[in-house]
Image 1 (tube, rainbow, N blue to C red):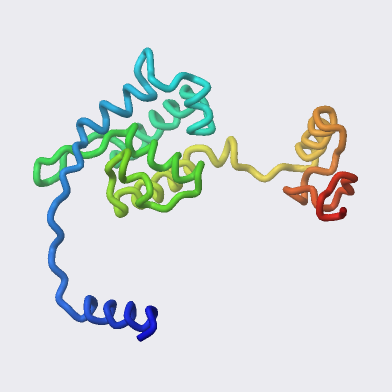
Image 2: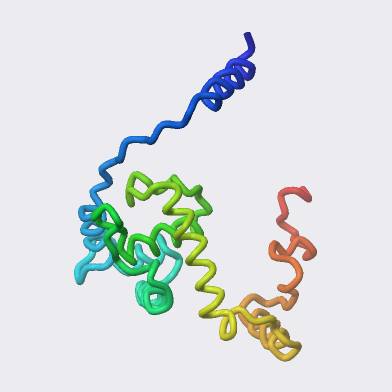
Length: 184
């Protein structure tokens, strides 16, 4: 029997059965927060400024500013206990999981080993984070550039890189390159 057919039959068997509630996983949320603070946010962190910038693609100051703005805007990003009295995730944990997903383009459950956050919670953090970043920063940072702004971008890019045509093609495929391996 082909492997694909066996997988389909197994899926049919599991979907036809009534769903049972999965046992709760001890995620050691207090330990996760402590490890995250020691690694990145303590006065003498394990991963210093350069490593933080490489891991998060932003400065620690900017990360903390965004986290503070989110806490002031939506109670979802504050530390809370759930209805069963279990410890929830902190602001740092929620923002870290979102930034890591955006930086590395990973799936919702890929950070479970380090942050011990379920796929559902990670997805919810991502949606809320994106919603609030647009609400908070769109007027100042996410605006459509006008003709004057585009001209300034062209001039700055030409001064730095020596050619002006940067908008319209992210990979600059429209520019001839003498060392292009594909052309060889």
